[in-house]
Image 1: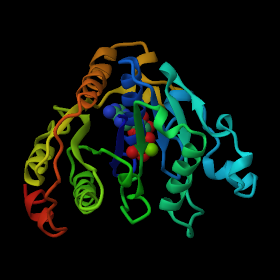
Image 2: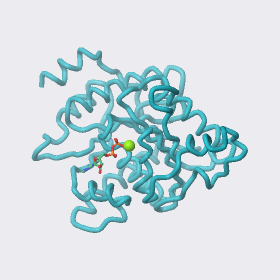
Image 3: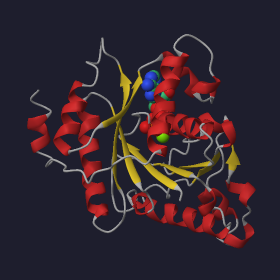
Image 4: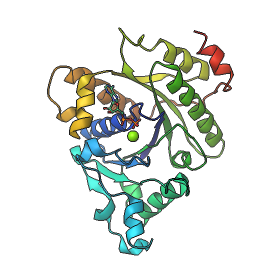
Length: 272
Ligand code: ADP
Ligand code: MG
């Protein structure tokens, strides 16, 4: 049985960085992993392959959406530790739907007979707007995972994501595995105090803490995973990913979150 994760969070919070390093850690633990970038930014898999690969939508557009003319190599590229990567791409700006793009990607993977070949599938999705389209990966996922940091705006987005996961869980198997705290900085950013308060309020937990670290910033620029970087702090940065990989491979308990109202969150978190 494969494990499917849908990773969400506010723009720029570190979804792609986290997804790529988590995929790498899962692969280093022996899993056959596919990471699917579902953000129109289409740089989800850059750290794994060191390149910006063509998106499914780019490739399909070139062949006038004749699926039979597309081969696996056109869209799937293998990156660090044997992780397969794919970028679904985005709908045309101002028109189209992110859900359609995700649907076409999953359809193509089924046509290649690939979808069931992986131990783990990681969807890296944007999370500022959880419209019907961008919530589509939740239809396929076992676990939703939210990336947030210890500030109000990423927690506001996290709460909306909890709402989307709660709604989807009524019709699909998906539940929330928990929150990954990113950019954790105990000196400047207060650690994870606000995030912990939020997690408890909505009935979930923090499943990993990734430090705010220059090695992570540089790995993004170099198109490398943290496992390929050298320098001080390497262990501090890679350990959380190896621990999260182990944790998720053991299929932890998940919950249907209990999100707050949009106004309530201003009182609960804003008034702290
Ligand atoms: P998203 O996919 O959510 O838009 P990215 O993963 O692309 O976000 O991250 C945005 C930027 O923040 C990148 O340049 C990345 O290197 C940087 N970044 C993310 N997490 C950290 C961290 N823990 N420490 C330092 N820089 C980080
Ligand atoms: Mg991204």
